[in-house]
Image (cartoon, rainbow, N blue to C red; front, side, top):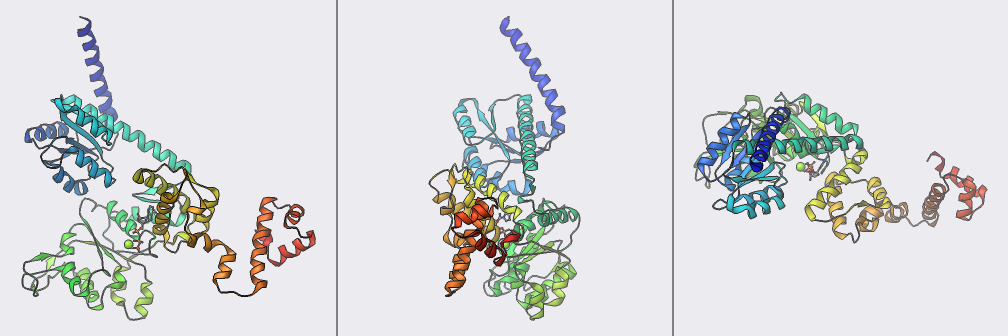
Length: 483
Ligand SMILES: Nc1ncnc2c1ncn2[C@@H]1O[C@H](COP(=O)(O)OP(=O)(O)OP(=O)(O)O)[C@@H](O)[C@H]1O
Ligand SMILES: [Mg+2]
């Protein structure tokens, strides 16, 4: 009797929970579910159940097949069987985690395989469902995952608001110049406009290109990237446009080019400044006619491709020097986005620093809490000629070298520390004058003393062991006043 009534209470609470969750669930965005199971029956049953409940569903019959689909389908949740021939659920989970794929993974396992399900949860699965299951169970677990994701998102958004930082796709920034770029990207989501992304090496040009694609109405179609400078000139044309069998000696079969691969989506032409002049002519033709011709083919093929080009060069200078065609330049420079170097948006350094610390802690298994005040100052003041990529590598290196749980200035490469030391700058310039070099040292000591005494000049003069009058004279001479 007692057991029965307890069961009843439980049943009631489950249905009310389900009802609550459904109402709640409508507000959420976790609609895309990828179901992975080698048993066709399970795939069909779960698929129809989820469709009925308003989910968008795709199915895969193996871990490998699922991996092939995650990019194109972009699931929010992956519901996978644990035991499958070849790649099982655990390996699938590990691969997704290694790629840092954000999908929530829920495993399904037969009653006898609970151990594996628990193992999956240890490896980062969100929950497990044991087979055979009731339909409500699946829906309930999905709703719970949604709820958690919403909380996580709100939490993250709150934290970022507090820090005043913005995130657009995977681009982190808070500087007005980057936030302006985010705005531009959101304005062009509906258009096929050609974009030219320019900026020094490592500023995030490729990230911007991906963000443009991923926020556009082409996001479910391919994003195909090619580095025009990295492919030998004689192969580049067939790479871009494809070839017919027999077009040249090695062309043993027909081949699609990248334009065809990117059809309906985006083609990212990285380092477009490196494109040889004869291909510049062909590219211009493709952009004007929206059709390509394969090598060795007599007919044109229509393509619908959005072009995003990137360059670290000043293309106007390349045009002036005759290395880049002016007509092509005007054709691709429809919407220019110039990503500023990191030294011109120092506000971004701190959030990138925190982001790389968190990410590397997760990836390297380290538990570094942060960086010392001195190290932070060095990082904030450095000129970062290699931009975000250099910052990323510097932090990873420092975290590996670090002996404690806080990165110290001594964990940073000499090149970065020395670059900031005016005495080193002076010495590196090959300066021989004792007078000029000691003036550089004097300035450092005076600034240091003034910072320490919070601007009290009498106390500063005492620390410096010079007269008050001499200090005033030097402050004026070195123009330290405007600090
Ligand atoms: N704002 C950002 N937020 C997070 N990561 C960033 C940001 N900008 C750049 N990165 C990271 O820095 C690295 C360099 O970025 P990316 O490859 O997009 O630069 P790039 O301008 O294309 O460089 P290159 O000219 O050398 O090809 C990447 O690992 C990228 O993820
Ligand atoms: Mg790049």
